Image (cartoon, rainbow, N blue to C red; front, side):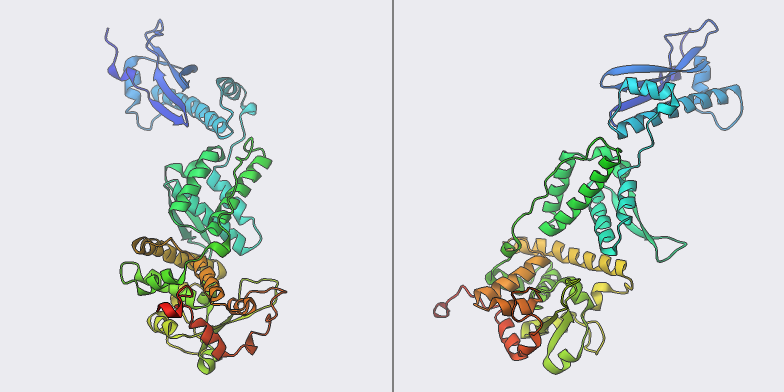
Length: 446
């Protein structure tokens, strides 16, 4: 008598990492009543283990299971029993894999004695979000969330920040994709190296890479301390080039100034950072038109990146090149209004403002990758603009104390600390007019 062709197909199948599960009709073990037993077969590294579900059906009834709908017939109950056994084994396999403890022996123990079943392991995404949100400051929480977004985008997932419907001010991260549900054990030294390489390819600065990698390391160390994983992967966070070496010469800056091709907007914004004393984009985001502009033709702000230190006012003299860029990108000068409202747009709280600044910075960095490639110069970031400003003035022989005052450095050795106002606007303007003058070209060569 011919066996129904459907008897050769599994009614349930799944896999967890390299462990494969199938629920199938074992036509080799025909019972006296003409039925066959249904087993769950677990395959791992070429070895197999069978688990009896306790259900026996004929090959024809087995074929009917594939098209069964809701009901309470004996066949429905048989399918339900098989599904329950299959899911129990699958859940145990997933839990063991999450802790890198899968063996057939451990699986048998988990099935035979539910109390020995491994505790449910959170996905890496779940743990990372919870760990990051537990941090005290908004700035630190944002660092963990941006690192998370970058990591899961590297894995090929789509990442979005959405507003919760019931609480419009509260937001959450939504990650979708095949690897959005990976467990902590997925992350090893190889994955981390590949992630770091992707950040290098994207042109991220050393400081940004360091922040992201430190966030992951803290998450993995916490998982190890809580025994959720056996041990956190060990990896070194490279320091990279010293900041003072992260600059480009005036000859390359002039190329960026004169550039007319695709990415011109990014080039202009990079120049704005450079001409504004190498300011951070966050400081420019909050920059407002004030009396210093109307009386001294300068932009000024209290430097924000010096929490717990003496507040320092940064004076930005408006040179002719900067004025042209202000005409192009700045708002109409109105006292108390933001100079560059397009950076923050309508963001009204600290998390949204941080996020907007980060996104705007990323757009500049991404655009400059193409610009620098076309110009044949090395890639630049926002920090390159600051260091290039300092380097240019240094090569022109400007005193260190004066440069520190211009960029808002706070240092006990800076004799001008707290006395920036005593440096005349005329002197500041004279210094910033050197920013497109190449100090490596002798006057006799011109």
